[in-house]
Image 1: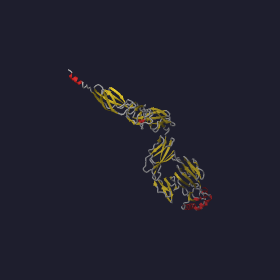
Image 2: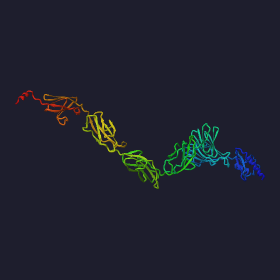
Image 3: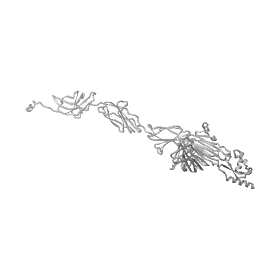
Length: 628
Protein backbone atom coordinates (compact mmCIF):
# COMPACT_ATOMS: atom_id res chain seq x y z
CA UNK A 1 0.00 0.00 0.00
CA UNK A 2 2.77 2.39 0.88
CA UNK A 3 4.46 1.61 -2.48
CA UNK A 4 1.29 2.40 -4.43
CA UNK A 5 0.83 5.67 -2.58
CA UNK A 6 4.44 6.58 -3.31
CA UNK A 7 4.04 5.86 -7.04
CA UNK A 8 0.87 7.92 -7.13
CA UNK A 9 2.60 10.83 -5.41
CA UNK A 10 5.45 10.67 -7.92
CA UNK A 11 3.04 10.67 -10.93
CA UNK A 12 1.03 13.61 -9.54
CA UNK A 13 4.21 15.56 -8.91
CA UNK A 14 5.42 15.03 -12.47
CA UNK A 15 1.95 15.77 -13.96
CA UNK A 16 2.07 19.21 -12.36
CA UNK A 17 5.24 19.87 -14.36
CA UNK A 18 3.69 19.15 -17.81
CA UNK A 19 5.20 21.12 -20.68
CA UNK A 20 3.20 22.54 -23.63
CA UNK A 21 4.62 19.76 -25.83
CA UNK A 22 3.36 16.90 -23.64
CA UNK A 23 0.20 14.89 -23.98
CA UNK A 24 -1.44 13.70 -20.76
CA UNK A 25 -2.62 10.11 -20.53
CA UNK A 26 -5.07 9.02 -17.78
CA UNK A 27 -4.21 5.51 -16.59
CA UNK A 28 -6.76 2.75 -16.20
CA UNK A 29 -6.52 -0.44 -14.11
CA UNK A 30 -4.06 -2.93 -15.60
CA UNK A 31 -2.02 -0.37 -17.56
CA UNK A 32 1.70 -0.94 -18.01
CA UNK A 33 4.23 1.33 -19.66
CA UNK A 34 5.05 -1.29 -22.27
CA UNK A 35 1.33 -1.66 -23.10
CA UNK A 36 0.97 2.10 -23.39
CA UNK A 37 4.00 2.11 -25.67
CA UNK A 38 2.42 -0.48 -27.95
CA UNK A 39 -0.79 1.55 -28.23
CA UNK A 40 0.36 5.15 -28.41
CA UNK A 41 4.05 5.41 -29.23
CA UNK A 42 5.53 5.68 -32.70
CA UNK A 43 8.26 3.31 -31.49
CA UNK A 44 6.80 1.02 -28.79
CA UNK A 45 10.29 0.48 -27.39
CA UNK A 46 10.44 4.14 -26.34
CA UNK A 47 8.36 3.45 -23.20
CA UNK A 48 11.45 3.90 -20.96
CA UNK A 49 11.48 7.58 -22.09
CA UNK A 50 7.95 7.88 -20.70
CA UNK A 51 9.10 6.18 -17.51
CA UNK A 52 11.96 8.63 -17.19
CA UNK A 53 9.79 11.67 -17.98
CA UNK A 54 7.29 10.69 -15.26
CA UNK A 55 9.68 9.11 -12.69
CA UNK A 56 7.76 5.83 -12.63
CA UNK A 57 9.60 3.36 -10.32
CA UNK A 58 7.75 0.18 -11.33
CA UNK A 59 6.67 0.16 -15.06
CA UNK A 60 4.35 -2.80 -14.60
CA UNK A 61 2.44 -1.39 -11.65
CA UNK A 62 0.69 1.87 -12.59
CA UNK A 63 -2.03 3.16 -10.29
CA UNK A 64 -5.41 3.85 -11.96
CA UNK A 65 -6.63 7.42 -12.63
CA UNK A 66 -3.14 8.85 -12.67
CA UNK A 67 -1.82 11.15 -15.43
CA UNK A 68 1.24 10.38 -17.47
CA UNK A 69 2.87 13.04 -19.59
CA UNK A 70 3.98 11.75 -22.98
CA UNK A 71 6.12 14.01 -25.21
CA UNK A 72 4.36 14.75 -28.50
CA UNK A 73 7.35 13.65 -30.55
CA UNK A 74 6.99 10.11 -29.17
CA UNK A 75 3.35 9.66 -30.26
CA UNK A 76 2.22 7.76 -33.29
CA UNK A 77 1.26 9.98 -36.23
CA UNK A 78 -1.10 8.49 -38.80
CA UNK A 79 -2.93 9.97 -41.78
CA UNK A 80 -6.28 11.59 -41.02
CA UNK A 81 -8.16 11.30 -44.33
CA UNK A 82 -11.01 13.62 -45.21
CA UNK A 83 -14.23 12.18 -46.65
CA UNK A 84 -16.03 14.01 -49.43
CA UNK A 85 -19.63 13.82 -48.22
CA UNK A 86 -21.54 15.76 -50.90
CA UNK A 87 -20.77 17.47 -54.20
CA UNK A 88 -23.08 19.90 -55.97
CA UNK A 89 -22.33 21.42 -59.35
CA UNK A 90 -19.06 21.52 -61.23
CA UNK A 91 -16.22 20.70 -58.84
CA UNK A 92 -12.75 19.38 -59.75
CA UNK A 93 -9.68 18.26 -57.83
CA UNK A 94 -6.14 17.09 -58.38
CA UNK A 95 -3.61 15.22 -56.26
CA UNK A 96 -0.16 16.82 -55.97
CA UNK A 97 0.97 17.44 -59.57
CA UNK A 98 -1.66 15.22 -61.20
CA UNK A 99 -4.35 16.40 -63.63
CA UNK A 100 -7.66 17.87 -62.55
CA UNK A 101 -10.57 15.49 -62.55
CA UNK A 102 -14.21 15.55 -61.52
CA UNK A 103 -14.79 15.35 -57.78
CA UNK A 104 -17.53 13.03 -56.59
CA UNK A 105 -19.08 12.22 -53.25
CA UNK A 106 -17.31 9.28 -51.55
CA UNK A 107 -13.83 10.42 -52.59
CA UNK A 108 -11.13 10.39 -49.86
CA UNK A 109 -8.52 13.14 -49.55
CA UNK A 110 -5.27 12.43 -47.69
CA UNK A 111 -3.43 15.77 -48.06
CA UNK A 112 -1.81 17.58 -50.95
CA UNK A 113 -5.02 17.90 -52.95
CA UNK A 114 -6.43 21.07 -54.53
CA UNK A 115 -10.20 21.43 -55.01
CA UNK A 116 -11.85 23.98 -57.29
CA UNK A 117 -15.57 24.71 -57.15
CA UNK A 118 -17.33 26.33 -60.08
CA UNK A 119 -20.07 28.90 -60.19
CA UNK A 120 -23.00 27.66 -58.11
CA UNK A 121 -21.09 24.57 -56.92
CA UNK A 122 -20.26 23.38 -53.40
CA UNK A 123 -18.45 20.50 -51.65
CA UNK A 124 -19.01 19.20 -48.12
CA UNK A 125 -16.27 17.39 -46.19
CA UNK A 126 -16.08 15.34 -42.97
CA UNK A 127 -12.70 15.32 -41.20
CA UNK A 128 -11.23 12.61 -38.98
CA UNK A 129 -12.32 14.42 -35.78
CA UNK A 130 -15.87 14.77 -37.20
CA UNK A 131 -15.33 18.43 -38.14
CA UNK A 132 -17.76 19.38 -40.93
CA UNK A 133 -16.72 21.92 -43.57
CA UNK A 134 -18.42 23.19 -46.72
CA UNK A 135 -16.45 24.74 -49.56
CA UNK A 136 -18.70 27.28 -51.29
CA UNK A 137 -18.91 28.27 -54.94
CA UNK A 138 -15.99 29.75 -56.90
CA UNK A 139 -13.42 28.70 -54.30
CA UNK A 140 -9.91 27.25 -54.39
CA UNK A 141 -8.98 25.12 -51.37
CA UNK A 142 -5.69 23.30 -50.78
CA UNK A 143 -5.42 20.41 -48.32
CA UNK A 144 -2.17 20.43 -46.40
CA UNK A 145 -1.29 18.39 -43.28
CA UNK A 146 -4.00 15.93 -42.27
CA UNK A 147 -2.56 14.07 -39.28
CA UNK A 148 -3.99 12.03 -36.41
CA UNK A 149 -1.98 11.25 -33.25
CA UNK A 150 -2.91 7.58 -32.98
CA UNK A 151 -5.70 6.92 -30.50
CA UNK A 152 -5.17 10.15 -28.59
CA UNK A 153 -8.06 11.88 -30.36
CA UNK A 154 -5.78 14.74 -31.39
CA UNK A 155 -6.02 15.69 -35.06
CA UNK A 156 -3.92 18.34 -36.77
CA UNK A 157 -5.44 19.93 -39.87
CA UNK A 158 -3.90 22.57 -42.10
CA UNK A 159 -5.75 24.04 -45.08
CA UNK A 160 -5.04 26.87 -47.48
CA UNK A 161 -7.89 28.96 -48.92
CA UNK A 162 -6.61 30.97 -51.88
CA UNK A 163 -10.01 32.47 -52.76
CA UNK A 164 -13.68 31.88 -52.06
CA UNK A 165 -15.59 30.92 -48.93
CA UNK A 166 -15.66 28.20 -46.27
CA UNK A 167 -18.29 27.41 -43.67
CA UNK A 168 -17.39 24.99 -40.89
CA UNK A 169 -18.54 23.40 -37.69
CA UNK A 170 -15.27 22.30 -36.13
CA UNK A 171 -15.05 19.71 -33.38
CA UNK A 172 -13.20 20.62 -30.18
CA UNK A 173 -9.50 20.52 -30.87
CA UNK A 174 -7.57 18.54 -28.22
CA UNK A 175 -4.37 19.97 -26.78
CA UNK A 176 -1.57 20.10 -27.23
CA UNK A 177 -1.16 18.81 -30.78
CA UNK A 178 -4.69 19.04 -32.05
CA UNK A 179 -5.50 22.11 -34.14
CA UNK A 180 -7.34 23.41 -37.20
CA UNK A 181 -5.61 26.14 -39.18
CA UNK A 182 -6.65 27.84 -42.40
CA UNK A 183 -3.98 29.84 -44.21
CA UNK A 184 -5.03 32.61 -46.61
CA UNK A 185 -2.97 35.09 -48.67
CA UNK A 186 -3.78 37.73 -46.03
CA UNK A 187 -3.95 36.05 -42.62
CA UNK A 188 -4.05 32.76 -40.73
CA UNK A 189 -7.10 31.60 -38.77
CA UNK A 190 -6.50 29.18 -35.93
CA UNK A 191 -9.54 27.35 -34.60
CA UNK A 192 -10.28 25.42 -31.44
CA UNK A 193 -13.79 24.04 -31.50
CA UNK A 194 -15.98 26.56 -33.31
CA UNK A 195 -18.56 27.37 -35.93
CA UNK A 196 -16.93 29.83 -38.32
CA UNK A 197 -16.84 31.22 -41.84
CA UNK A 198 -13.91 32.41 -43.91
CA UNK A 199 -14.17 34.52 -47.04
CA UNK A 200 -11.19 35.41 -49.23
CA UNK A 201 -11.76 37.93 -52.00
CA UNK A 202 -11.19 36.80 -55.56
CA UNK A 203 -8.04 38.93 -55.82
CA UNK A 204 -6.73 37.46 -52.55
CA UNK A 205 -6.27 40.88 -50.93
CA UNK A 206 -8.98 40.74 -48.26
CA UNK A 207 -10.03 38.07 -45.79
CA UNK A 208 -13.17 38.12 -43.65
CA UNK A 209 -13.89 35.85 -40.70
CA UNK A 210 -17.17 35.43 -38.82
CA UNK A 211 -17.50 33.32 -35.68
CA UNK A 212 -20.91 32.00 -34.69
CA UNK A 213 -19.68 29.57 -32.01
CA UNK A 214 -16.46 29.14 -30.06
CA UNK A 215 -13.47 31.32 -30.91
CA UNK A 216 -10.94 31.96 -33.67
CA UNK A 217 -7.51 33.53 -33.52
CA UNK A 218 -6.73 35.54 -36.66
CA UNK A 219 -3.06 36.45 -37.20
CA UNK A 220 -1.59 38.84 -39.76
CA UNK A 221 1.46 41.11 -39.88
CA UNK A 222 2.68 39.79 -36.54
CA UNK A 223 -0.51 40.68 -34.69
CA UNK A 224 -3.21 38.32 -33.44
CA UNK A 225 -6.88 39.13 -32.85
CA UNK A 226 -9.07 36.77 -30.88
CA UNK A 227 -12.59 36.66 -32.32
CA UNK A 228 -15.29 35.37 -30.00
CA UNK A 229 -18.68 34.00 -30.93
CA UNK A 230 -20.99 36.67 -32.33
CA UNK A 231 -18.13 38.75 -33.73
CA UNK A 232 -16.21 39.04 -36.95
CA UNK A 233 -13.05 40.61 -38.28
CA UNK A 234 -11.40 41.35 -41.57
CA UNK A 235 -7.82 41.73 -42.71
CA UNK A 236 -6.45 43.50 -45.73
CA UNK A 237 -3.20 42.69 -47.45
CA UNK A 238 -0.26 44.24 -45.60
CA UNK A 239 -2.35 45.23 -42.57
CA UNK A 240 -3.11 43.58 -39.22
CA UNK A 241 -6.63 42.26 -38.55
CA UNK A 242 -9.28 44.85 -37.70
CA UNK A 243 -10.79 44.87 -34.21
CA UNK A 244 -13.76 42.47 -33.94
CA UNK A 245 -17.25 43.89 -34.57
CA UNK A 246 -20.63 42.42 -33.65
CA UNK A 247 -22.35 40.32 -36.29
CA UNK A 248 -25.78 41.32 -37.57
CA UNK A 249 -28.72 39.53 -35.90
CA UNK A 250 -30.79 36.89 -37.63
CA UNK A 251 -33.23 38.24 -40.25
CA UNK A 252 -36.93 37.87 -39.49
CA UNK A 253 -38.33 35.05 -41.62
CA UNK A 254 -41.60 34.65 -39.73
CA UNK A 255 -43.60 36.09 -42.60
CA UNK A 256 -42.41 33.57 -45.20
CA UNK A 257 -45.01 31.02 -46.39
CA UNK A 258 -44.79 27.35 -45.49
CA UNK A 259 -45.99 26.35 -48.97
CA UNK A 260 -45.08 28.01 -52.27
CA UNK A 261 -47.15 27.21 -55.33
CA UNK A 262 -45.43 29.04 -58.17
CA UNK A 263 -42.12 29.42 -59.98
CA UNK A 264 -39.80 31.21 -60.40
CA UNK A 265 -39.17 31.09 -56.68
CA UNK A 266 -39.34 34.47 -54.96
CA UNK A 267 -38.99 35.06 -51.20
CA UNK A 268 -39.37 38.40 -49.40
CA UNK A 269 -38.44 39.42 -45.86
CA UNK A 270 -38.40 42.69 -43.88
CA UNK A 271 -35.57 45.09 -44.67
CA UNK A 272 -32.96 46.03 -42.08
CA UNK A 273 -31.32 49.43 -41.74
CA UNK A 274 -28.06 47.72 -40.70
CA UNK A 275 -27.83 45.28 -43.60
CA UNK A 276 -26.32 46.47 -46.85
CA UNK A 277 -27.11 43.15 -48.56
CA UNK A 278 -28.19 39.59 -47.80
CA UNK A 279 -26.77 36.15 -48.57
CA UNK A 280 -29.49 33.63 -49.32
CA UNK A 281 -28.78 29.92 -49.68
CA UNK A 282 -31.11 27.12 -50.68
CA UNK A 283 -30.78 23.42 -49.88
CA UNK A 284 -32.85 20.27 -49.59
CA UNK A 285 -31.01 19.41 -46.35
CA UNK A 286 -31.30 21.23 -43.01
CA UNK A 287 -27.52 20.97 -42.48
CA UNK A 288 -26.82 22.46 -45.94
CA UNK A 289 -24.29 19.81 -46.90
CA UNK A 290 -25.49 20.40 -50.46
CA UNK A 291 -26.12 24.01 -51.45
CA UNK A 292 -28.39 24.35 -54.47
CA UNK A 293 -28.42 28.13 -54.69
CA UNK A 294 -26.09 30.69 -53.11
CA UNK A 295 -26.54 34.34 -54.00
CA UNK A 296 -26.10 37.83 -52.58
CA UNK A 297 -29.07 40.20 -53.02
CA UNK A 298 -28.95 43.96 -52.55
CA UNK A 299 -32.67 44.10 -51.71
CA UNK A 300 -34.65 42.01 -49.17
CA UNK A 301 -35.86 39.58 -51.80
CA UNK A 302 -34.37 36.38 -53.19
CA UNK A 303 -35.35 35.50 -56.75
CA UNK A 304 -34.25 32.23 -58.35
CA UNK A 305 -35.15 31.34 -61.92
CA UNK A 306 -34.01 27.72 -61.60
CA UNK A 307 -36.59 25.06 -62.48
CA UNK A 308 -36.66 23.51 -59.03
CA UNK A 309 -38.58 20.26 -58.55
CA UNK A 310 -41.42 20.10 -56.05
CA UNK A 311 -40.38 19.07 -52.55
CA UNK A 312 -39.13 20.31 -49.19
CA UNK A 313 -36.49 23.06 -49.16
CA UNK A 314 -34.55 25.04 -46.59
CA UNK A 315 -33.69 28.71 -46.88
CA UNK A 316 -30.69 30.02 -44.96
CA UNK A 317 -30.41 33.79 -44.82
CA UNK A 318 -28.07 36.28 -43.18
CA UNK A 319 -27.42 40.00 -43.44
CA UNK A 320 -24.18 41.55 -44.69
CA UNK A 321 -22.90 44.69 -42.96
CA UNK A 322 -20.87 47.66 -44.17
CA UNK A 323 -17.60 45.75 -43.74
CA UNK A 324 -18.80 42.80 -45.81
CA UNK A 325 -19.14 40.62 -42.69
CA UNK A 326 -22.04 38.21 -42.71
CA UNK A 327 -24.28 37.91 -39.66
CA UNK A 328 -26.16 35.14 -37.89
CA UNK A 329 -28.17 32.67 -39.94
CA UNK A 330 -31.94 32.47 -40.01
CA UNK A 331 -33.43 29.32 -41.47
CA UNK A 332 -36.87 28.59 -42.89
CA UNK A 333 -38.35 25.31 -44.07
CA UNK A 334 -40.95 25.37 -46.84
CA UNK A 335 -42.60 23.08 -49.34
CA UNK A 336 -42.57 23.83 -53.06
CA UNK A 337 -45.80 22.58 -54.60
CA UNK A 338 -45.91 24.23 -58.03
CA UNK A 339 -46.66 21.36 -60.44
CA UNK A 340 -48.19 21.33 -62.89
CA UNK A 341 -46.70 24.67 -63.82
CA UNK A 342 -48.75 27.38 -65.51
CA UNK A 343 -48.86 27.32 -69.30
CA UNK A 344 -46.95 30.03 -71.13
CA UNK A 345 -49.30 32.44 -73.00
CA UNK A 346 -48.38 32.75 -76.69
CA UNK A 347 -51.25 34.50 -78.54
CA UNK A 348 -52.31 37.26 -78.64
CA UNK A 349 -48.91 38.85 -78.17
CA UNK A 350 -48.46 41.22 -75.25
CA UNK A 351 -50.17 44.52 -76.11
CA UNK A 352 -51.39 43.27 -79.49
CA UNK A 353 -54.29 45.19 -81.05
CA UNK A 354 -56.72 42.96 -82.90
CA UNK A 355 -59.10 44.01 -85.65
CA UNK A 356 -61.56 41.13 -85.35
CA UNK A 357 -63.80 40.39 -82.38
CA UNK A 358 -63.09 36.65 -82.60
CA UNK A 359 -59.83 36.04 -80.75
CA UNK A 360 -57.59 32.99 -80.79
CA UNK A 361 -55.95 32.40 -77.40
CA UNK A 362 -52.98 30.04 -77.53
CA UNK A 363 -50.47 28.79 -74.95
CA UNK A 364 -47.72 26.23 -74.55
CA UNK A 365 -49.15 23.12 -72.89
CA UNK A 366 -47.89 22.37 -69.38
CA UNK A 367 -46.50 18.95 -68.46
CA UNK A 368 -48.90 17.01 -66.27
CA UNK A 369 -51.82 19.41 -66.72
CA UNK A 370 -55.19 17.64 -66.82
CA UNK A 371 -56.90 20.75 -68.17
CA UNK A 372 -56.84 24.50 -67.81
CA UNK A 373 -58.73 27.38 -66.25
CA UNK A 374 -58.90 30.42 -68.53
CA UNK A 375 -59.82 33.87 -67.25
CA UNK A 376 -60.54 37.02 -69.26
CA UNK A 377 -61.46 40.43 -67.89
CA UNK A 378 -61.38 44.09 -68.95
CA UNK A 379 -59.09 44.96 -66.01
CA UNK A 380 -55.82 43.39 -64.78
CA UNK A 381 -57.38 42.78 -61.34
CA UNK A 382 -59.83 40.25 -62.87
CA UNK A 383 -62.42 41.52 -60.39
CA UNK A 384 -65.19 42.80 -62.68
CA UNK A 385 -66.52 41.53 -65.97
CA UNK A 386 -64.74 38.20 -65.44
CA UNK A 387 -65.16 35.51 -68.08
CA UNK A 388 -64.00 32.07 -66.90
CA UNK A 389 -63.68 28.84 -68.87
CA UNK A 390 -62.60 25.35 -67.72
CA UNK A 391 -60.92 23.79 -70.71
CA UNK A 392 -59.80 20.24 -71.53
CA UNK A 393 -56.12 19.51 -72.28
CA UNK A 394 -55.03 21.44 -75.37
CA UNK A 395 -53.12 24.52 -76.39
CA UNK A 396 -55.68 26.98 -77.80
CA UNK A 397 -59.28 28.16 -77.75
CA UNK A 398 -61.35 30.90 -79.43
CA UNK A 399 -63.49 33.60 -77.85
CA UNK A 400 -65.75 36.28 -79.33
CA UNK A 401 -65.33 39.44 -77.26
CA UNK A 402 -66.66 43.00 -77.36
CA UNK A 403 -64.35 45.76 -78.54
CA UNK A 404 -62.05 47.27 -75.92
CA UNK A 405 -59.08 46.42 -73.71
CA UNK A 406 -58.78 42.84 -72.39
CA UNK A 407 -56.51 40.88 -70.03
CA UNK A 408 -56.14 37.12 -69.90
CA UNK A 409 -54.35 34.48 -67.84
CA UNK A 410 -54.44 30.70 -67.62
CA UNK A 411 -53.74 28.10 -64.92
CA UNK A 412 -53.17 24.35 -65.06
CA UNK A 413 -55.53 21.87 -63.41
CA UNK A 414 -53.97 18.94 -61.55
CA UNK A 415 -55.26 15.37 -61.29
CA UNK A 416 -57.66 16.36 -58.52
CA UNK A 417 -59.03 19.20 -60.65
CA UNK A 418 -57.45 21.82 -58.41
CA UNK A 419 -56.44 25.14 -59.95
CA UNK A 420 -52.70 25.69 -59.73
CA UNK A 421 -50.86 29.00 -60.09
CA UNK A 422 -51.92 31.35 -62.89
CA UNK A 423 -49.59 32.47 -65.61
CA UNK A 424 -48.66 36.17 -65.73
CA UNK A 425 -51.58 38.06 -67.24
CA UNK A 426 -51.34 39.51 -70.73
CA UNK A 427 -53.12 42.52 -72.15
CA UNK A 428 -54.52 42.89 -75.64
CA UNK A 429 -57.13 45.06 -77.34
CA UNK A 430 -59.96 44.49 -79.79
CA UNK A 431 -60.51 47.51 -81.99
CA UNK A 432 -62.40 46.76 -85.24
CA UNK A 433 -61.52 49.34 -87.89
CA UNK A 434 -64.11 51.83 -89.15
CA UNK A 435 -66.09 51.11 -92.30
CA UNK A 436 -64.51 52.37 -95.55
CA UNK A 437 -65.16 55.99 -96.35
CA UNK A 438 -67.65 57.11 -99.05
CA UNK A 439 -66.46 60.16 -100.99
CA UNK A 440 -68.60 63.10 -102.01
CA UNK A 441 -67.03 64.24 -105.27
CA UNK A 442 -66.25 67.91 -105.71
CA UNK A 443 -69.23 69.96 -106.86
CA UNK A 444 -69.83 69.90 -110.58
CA UNK A 445 -68.30 70.65 -112.95
CA UNK A 446 -65.46 68.21 -112.37
CA UNK A 447 -63.21 70.72 -114.02
CA UNK A 448 -62.18 73.48 -111.65
CA UNK A 449 -60.84 76.84 -112.63
CA UNK A 450 -59.35 77.52 -109.17
CA UNK A 451 -56.50 75.81 -107.29
CA UNK A 452 -58.66 75.90 -104.18
CA UNK A 453 -60.87 72.82 -103.74
CA UNK A 454 -62.90 71.57 -100.79
CA UNK A 455 -63.04 67.77 -100.58
CA UNK A 456 -65.99 66.20 -98.77
CA UNK A 457 -66.84 62.68 -97.60
CA UNK A 458 -69.44 60.93 -95.49
CA UNK A 459 -68.67 60.17 -91.82
CA UNK A 460 -67.67 56.57 -91.08
CA UNK A 461 -68.87 54.61 -88.03
CA UNK A 462 -66.17 54.20 -85.29
CA UNK A 463 -63.87 56.61 -87.11
CA UNK A 464 -61.80 58.80 -84.82
CA UNK A 465 -60.02 60.60 -87.66
CA UNK A 466 -59.39 60.41 -91.39
CA UNK A 467 -56.35 60.30 -93.61
CA UNK A 468 -56.65 62.30 -96.84
CA UNK A 469 -54.33 61.97 -99.81
CA UNK A 470 -54.17 64.01 -103.01
CA UNK A 471 -51.80 63.05 -105.82
CA UNK A 472 -51.17 63.75 -109.48
CA UNK A 473 -51.29 60.01 -110.32
CA UNK A 474 -53.84 57.34 -109.37
CA UNK A 475 -51.15 55.21 -107.68
CA UNK A 476 -50.52 57.94 -105.07
CA UNK A 477 -46.78 57.28 -105.15
CA UNK A 478 -45.99 60.93 -104.42
CA UNK A 479 -48.98 62.57 -102.76
CA UNK A 480 -48.91 66.35 -102.55
CA UNK A 481 -51.37 66.18 -99.66
CA UNK A 482 -51.21 63.50 -96.92
CA UNK A 483 -53.01 64.77 -93.84
CA UNK A 484 -54.75 63.36 -90.78
CA UNK A 485 -57.94 65.30 -90.00
CA UNK A 486 -60.87 64.78 -87.67
CA UNK A 487 -63.47 66.61 -89.80
CA UNK A 488 -65.21 65.17 -92.87
CA UNK A 489 -63.88 67.79 -95.27
CA UNK A 490 -60.57 69.33 -96.21
CA UNK A 491 -59.67 72.37 -98.28
CA UNK A 492 -56.63 71.93 -100.49
CA UNK A 493 -54.64 74.25 -102.73
CA UNK A 494 -53.18 72.62 -105.81
CA UNK A 495 -49.68 73.48 -107.02
CA UNK A 496 -50.36 73.26 -110.78
CA UNK A 497 -52.93 72.59 -113.45
CA UNK A 498 -53.77 69.08 -114.52
CA UNK A 499 -55.69 66.01 -113.35
CA UNK A 500 -55.78 65.36 -109.59
CA UNK A 501 -56.77 62.26 -107.61
CA UNK A 502 -57.90 61.96 -104.02
CA UNK A 503 -58.87 59.31 -101.52
CA UNK A 504 -59.69 59.01 -97.81
CA UNK A 505 -59.10 56.31 -95.17
CA UNK A 506 -61.18 56.16 -91.96
CA UNK A 507 -58.95 55.69 -88.86
CA UNK A 508 -60.04 53.95 -85.67
CA UNK A 509 -58.26 53.26 -82.36
CA UNK A 510 -54.54 53.07 -82.90
CA UNK A 511 -55.15 54.36 -86.46
CA UNK A 512 -56.34 50.92 -87.53
CA UNK A 513 -58.15 51.05 -90.84
CA UNK A 514 -59.68 48.97 -93.59
CA UNK A 515 -57.76 50.97 -96.13
CA UNK A 516 -58.47 53.85 -98.46
CA UNK A 517 -61.68 54.59 -100.27
CA UNK A 518 -62.00 54.37 -104.03
CA UNK A 519 -60.26 57.17 -105.86
CA UNK A 520 -62.03 60.24 -107.20
CA UNK A 521 -60.56 62.77 -109.66
CA UNK A 522 -61.08 66.22 -111.17
CA UNK A 523 -59.22 68.54 -113.47
CA UNK A 524 -57.88 71.91 -112.53
CA UNK A 525 -57.48 74.25 -115.50
CA UNK A 526 -56.96 77.87 -114.53
CA UNK A 527 -59.59 80.13 -116.11
CA UNK A 528 -58.76 83.07 -118.38
CA UNK A 529 -58.53 86.46 -116.80
CA UNK A 530 -61.93 87.91 -116.06
CA UNK A 531 -62.65 90.65 -118.62
CA UNK A 532 -63.99 94.12 -117.76
CA UNK A 533 -66.47 96.05 -120.00
CA UNK A 534 -65.26 99.53 -120.85
CA UNK A 535 -68.19 101.06 -122.79
CA UNK A 536 -71.33 100.44 -124.86
CA UNK A 537 -72.44 103.06 -127.43
CA UNK A 538 -75.11 103.31 -130.11
CA UNK A 539 -73.81 103.71 -133.59
CA UNK A 540 -75.86 103.60 -136.83
CA UNK A 541 -78.50 101.34 -135.33
CA UNK A 542 -75.96 99.13 -133.68
CA UNK A 543 -74.87 98.74 -130.14
CA UNK A 544 -71.03 98.74 -130.03
CA UNK A 545 -69.53 97.12 -126.89
CA UNK A 546 -65.81 97.34 -125.99
CA UNK A 547 -63.96 95.57 -123.09
CA UNK A 548 -60.44 94.78 -121.86
CA UNK A 549 -58.80 91.37 -122.21
CA UNK A 550 -56.25 89.24 -124.06
CA UNK A 551 -58.03 85.88 -124.46
CA UNK A 552 -58.28 84.26 -127.89
CA UNK A 553 -62.11 84.41 -127.73
CA UNK A 554 -65.00 86.00 -125.83
CA UNK A 555 -68.69 85.53 -125.51
CA UNK A 556 -70.86 88.63 -125.20
CA UNK A 557 -74.23 88.06 -123.58
CA UNK A 558 -77.27 90.40 -123.60
CA UNK A 559 -80.09 89.80 -121.13
CA UNK A 560 -83.30 91.55 -120.20
CA UNK A 561 -82.63 90.95 -116.48
CA UNK A 562 -79.67 91.34 -114.21
CA UNK A 563 -79.63 87.66 -113.24
CA UNK A 564 -79.11 86.64 -116.88
CA UNK A 565 -81.75 83.97 -116.41
CA UNK A 566 -82.64 84.36 -120.09
CA UNK A 567 -80.47 85.67 -122.87
CA UNK A 568 -81.65 87.93 -125.67
CA UNK A 569 -78.38 87.58 -127.50
CA UNK A 570 -75.11 85.61 -127.24
CA UNK A 571 -72.28 86.33 -129.61
CA UNK A 572 -68.75 84.81 -129.70
CA UNK A 573 -65.97 86.98 -131.09
CA UNK A 574 -62.19 86.84 -131.26
CA UNK A 575 -61.44 90.44 -130.32
CA UNK A 576 -62.41 92.57 -127.32
CA UNK A 577 -65.23 94.31 -129.25
CA UNK A 578 -68.62 93.29 -130.59
CA UNK A 579 -71.46 94.95 -132.53
CA UNK A 580 -75.05 94.07 -131.71
CA UNK A 581 -78.21 95.10 -133.52
CA UNK A 582 -79.71 97.68 -131.25
CA UNK A 583 -82.63 96.13 -129.41
CA UNK A 584 -86.01 97.71 -128.87
CA UNK A 585 -86.11 100.59 -126.43
CA UNK A 586 -85.76 99.44 -122.84
CA UNK A 587 -83.28 98.54 -120.12
CA UNK A 588 -80.75 95.76 -120.76
CA UNK A 589 -77.66 94.16 -119.15
CA UNK A 590 -74.43 93.17 -120.84
CA UNK A 591 -71.58 90.88 -119.69
CA UNK A 592 -68.49 89.27 -121.23
CA UNK A 593 -66.90 85.83 -120.61
CA UNK A 594 -63.31 85.12 -121.69
CA UNK A 595 -62.61 81.73 -123.34
CA UNK A 596 -59.10 80.28 -123.40
CA UNK A 597 -57.50 77.94 -125.91
CA UNK A 598 -58.73 74.89 -123.94
CA UNK A 599 -62.27 76.27 -124.17
CA UNK A 600 -62.20 77.00 -120.44
CA UNK A 601 -64.33 79.98 -119.54
CA UNK A 602 -63.47 82.71 -117.12
CA UNK A 603 -65.89 84.04 -114.55
CA UNK A 604 -68.27 86.56 -116.18
CA UNK A 605 -67.35 90.22 -116.09
CA UNK A 606 -69.30 92.62 -113.98
CA UNK A 607 -72.62 93.28 -115.73
CA UNK A 608 -73.26 96.67 -117.36
CA UNK A 609 -76.73 98.23 -117.45
CA UNK A 610 -77.69 99.72 -120.87
CA UNK A 611 -80.80 101.89 -121.60
CA UNK A 612 -81.99 101.93 -125.20
CA UNK A 613 -84.26 104.93 -126.07
CA UNK A 614 -86.64 105.58 -129.07
CA UNK A 615 -85.65 108.74 -131.05
CA UNK A 616 -88.10 110.52 -133.60
CA UNK A 617 -86.72 112.23 -136.83
CA UNK A 618 -86.41 116.04 -136.59
CA UNK A 619 -88.40 116.65 -139.78
CA UNK A 620 -91.30 114.75 -138.37
CA UNK A 621 -91.78 117.16 -135.47
CA UNK A 622 -93.46 120.07 -137.55
CA UNK A 623 -95.88 117.66 -139.08
CA UNK A 624 -96.84 116.47 -135.68
CA UNK A 625 -97.38 120.04 -134.52
CA UNK A 626 -99.63 120.94 -137.55
CA UNK A 627 -101.78 117.99 -137.27
CA UNK A 628 -105.41 118.78 -136.27
